[in-house]
Image: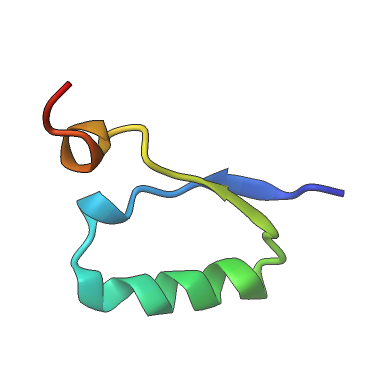
Length: 46
């Protein structure tokens, strides 16, 4: 079964990412959705 959540690392300090990943694993998440608000970072030009 897929059990996941949205996660937006660009809203957090990079030093928190590993901690958040550990919390998500401990909660049993196996999927995350990310990138919704980072499109301008990933593709700043057309």
